[in-house]
Image (cartoon, rainbow over all chains, first blue to last red; front, top):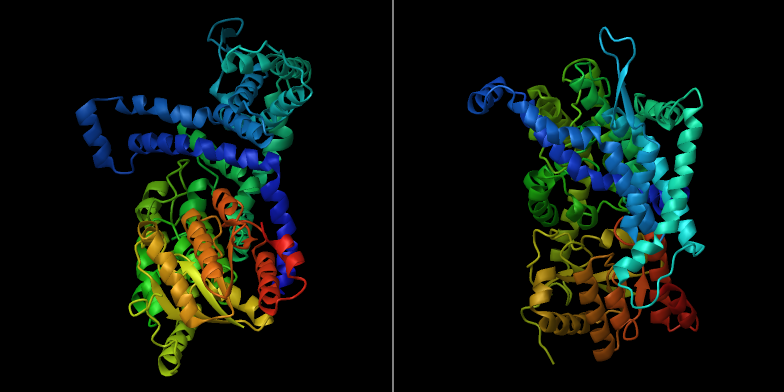
Amino acid sequence: MMQKLEKILMPIANVLSRNKILIAIRDGFLVTVPITIVGSIFLLISNFPLEGFLNMMTSIFGEGWDVYLGRVSAIAFDCVALLGVLSIGYCYAREKGLENRIAGGVVAMVCFLIITPQKTFVELEGAAEAASFSGFQFTFLGTAGMFLAMLTAILSVEIYAWAIKKKLIIRLPDGVPPMVMESFASLIPSAIAMTIFFVVGIIFDHTSFEYVHYFIYKVLQTPLVGLGKLSGFEVIYQFLSTLFWFFGINGPAVTNTIFSPIHKVLTVENYEAAQAGLEMTNIFTAGFSDFFCNFGGGGSTLGLVIMMAFLGKSNRMKTLGRLSLPAGIFGINEPLIFGLPIVLNPLMAVPFIFAPVVNTIIGYVATVTGIMPITLGVQLPWTCPIIFSGFLVTGSVMGSVVQIVMLIVDILIYYPFFKLLDQRYMQEESAAGNETDELDDLSFDDLELD
Amino acid sequence: MKVVLIFDQGLAGAGGKSNPNVGLTAVKGGIGSSLMLEPHFEKIGAQVAATLYCGNEYFQNNEEEVVKKMTAMAKKVNPDFVLCGPCFNYPDYARMAAMISTSILENTDIKSCAMMSVENGDTIAAYKDKTPILKMPKKGGTGLNDSFADLCEFMKCSVEQSAELENVRNRVCY
């Protein structure tokens, strides 16, 4: 059964984790994560869920102090497509084996800006015609442009790389400094990519869509992000992520190639809704995925580690549990994955795969029933510990309460499997103590060296 | 077939980066990641006699001592095969494994190999002519089970001194 399952999963993992386009999109979004986290911290400070804190800040810095913080969060969230096109372009240039990767990233960003509306029309009260001014709108640089940013990054770098491969480059004589040489080598490939996107932009100007943004948003982004709004979305993501891990394959590295752009859009949409004073409607944000599905790393192993540390009877369980607990609190379970082990250990497969799924269902039910508020459009470091993360990502103490309930449920799920493994290790330890052969007193202390 | 495993502290289940200074330790039977290997070992009738391990930093600070004592302990246990790995893409562990496997082959009659992913390029280049180094995926990569099947085929051919050994080695080693 397990072998059959692995035979099915291996080719899928290979295709997803080795596909250059998907790797570039996944890694490109990873580049933007620190920016989003920093932006989230600024956003959290200006909207901290404690009235007393906000009043204290106003008394120190005066009215309107939060407006200044908004400058940072606006770049992190409202320019997410612009940041994405640059980083995905860079990563795709890397995947294509281009030497001048940043040139690929810059060409991708320029092509994206070429097809982005550069004029904004504003209706003015009493004026017969709308006024206009030159400049980009956040509307096109934020979530609404995310999928277009991905497509543009891939296509523009593809064109750029094709031109480089076909040697459509200007060669300068030997002796010219390498930087100048590289710069001129990029000239024709950049010109080809920019011209093609220039033409594409003009074509769309003459369609009913007006801009490429509207076209991609309607035909690609809306249906795909719509999948993320289905109730089964997060359950499938969590199930697949841990299923791959069980076979030693880094599950999120595979599943994020598909799911991370959708999580990103869902998160930033909640931010934009909150900024516009509208109701946030997306349940499965990055915050939900990071802090209401897994505690202590993939497989939600924090409950297991706590039991190992405090209820373990075998020396192996106790030692590994106590050593793994500090890292586990911050969401890291690598010592457990290979040390317990969990990888390729059939006994641990059931709780490891199903604990995150059960957490996801509890989190979903708690949100739709209003037990805890919907997660905010913020992204915190995934190492943020349980209880703190629940409070910060929902703005309510109920977020922490739901996390504690989930942790207790995880402990119950893992308990029978933990007991079985602990008993097995105890038997092995006592059997080793009872047998008498030359290996019983194995020690480096009395080792004789030749 | 009697096997000795050489692990670092992570694979031994003695903690990861939180416990890098654990000293040389010998345990009867298999511990930690041994559980991943056991179903494969069963197919070739191999049993883990002992697991020897130490922390990454302990190795870095006492390279000569670790290699010498691990070799001496392997000689004392006298297994049919010593597996130094699987090291995945852990660079310190990979170097330790390659050095110990080389020492065992040079100083004893016991068969041995190291096992690591391609990311340990420097170690592979420095030691692949001194010890067999088996291919395996990096941490989280695809093909872990297949690499363990290759390992068992190699171990069986080595111990039985099969005529197929050269072909298998060319296929599964760097």
